[in-house]
Length: 387
Image (cartoon, rainbow, N blue to C red; front, side, top):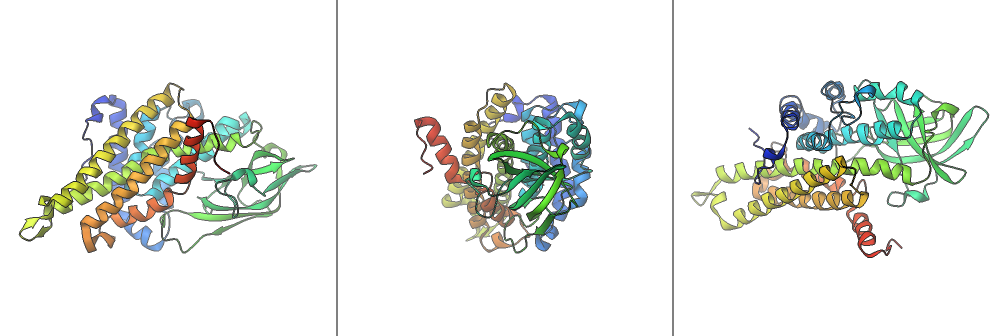
């Protein structure tokens, strides 16, 4: 049975509501997701049937006001949900991150009242699914260079271009698509089935296998006038969305690290070599101590980040630091756990190899480790080093 990692007793700082939400998310993952994830990972599919359950529990768009169907939770509670979901699998947390931070958030933040009325409740409940189209085949770290364009027509807008590595792309009822309109990046809502809009599922992934990933192609795809997100204005608009998603990654990856540490600790205590459990050896203990220390540091980083966010004092660079650190350390922890498990570490009888492979992707999406290094470097020196 999973035992939460809480070496510094951070749970004592949580409100009763936050504890209840964390326990609800943990039990959901334990009862509904852990029993099915291995098979879905093997076949390379996302368990779509779980989406409405996420909605019923209030895990999608959970910080939004109740008037739009949200739960009105604070950012500690939201972070704890993401942490528990990724303890199950990065693909589960990625679904919720995209749905909440990259689809629900931009419609709430930049959309018209008509768009909010049409989409928010159905997305928050899980009855509709969305995706976020920013990354292109040739432009990932430099989204400003995007080639996707929109031009005004008599009836609306016509979009041309391609988006790549889009989470939830094949499942989505609506895509939040970013394109250049008169050289200014704007957001558009493109609904499933719109003529000129094609989706191709990406196969052959060795990471995030239990996550839907697709390519979106727009060929003279015409959408109505009312499908532009009216308050989007330049690159800063999608970057604000990415800040929301990166926040959830900072929390989520700690859940993956906790799962790996818990597995490695229990394995080390029960695996006998040379008449002693391998947990009795100094080299194993050094690894376990490193793991629990870095998890604790990441938990503290996340807790204060959430406080800053709730107080509206959080800056995007704060999120960059948490995303950069927590992903890097979680990947190190997953690799250490795999080494403790030895040959068993590559078997999906244990969750470690799945988390390790997933974290290789999380390290590069939503801003690579290197890009977040440069973001922080510019913030502390005042000098941009991107070029």
